[in-house]
Image (cartoon, rainbow, N blue to C red):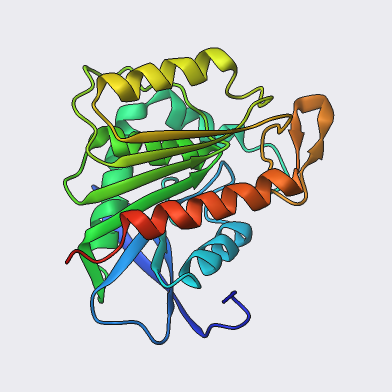
Length: 248
């Protein structure tokens, strides 16, 4: 069942971290049980954009409450087709602050009505993939899975990494200039050392942003790939279904 076939409820939710207010987007099926699994969706570098909201709707149509979190602040938005490094780079430069904001979003997701707080997964694209991985590195007790799609893989280097309890799925374009093979090998070692249950799906010839239908900047290594898009969506669906299934 896709978004067009499933009736969804959509709302905006404010939450805070310190003195900063953030605005999250919630999508959920209208017919959902009283204790449903939740997918926290981390945005890419443009912030809580309309494309991210559409992705949240797609995830909700799978039968989840989807909470698209915000790490920039309420009303701080970029251009989905433009250069948003002025928004992203301060977060990359202060990964401790980024982690703090991600945990605030995680707490907001757990507090949503109708969410089973013991069944939460994090998903992110590009910069959001880094966010999903940083949330897994923070190891909140109720995070059961983290999925990075053509994500930035560089570690935060903010202290010794403890155990990672969430299952981790990396969906990676092998020719992605944002995450070269050295970064892939490094995160494989990191996840292994942290005792994580992890998987890597690498798509040959796929470049950065391979799931974004409008991506066509080959000179920058940013190109849509329909086959990798289809395969990665199927892999994510299966991974979420396994990780978020109700416990007997």
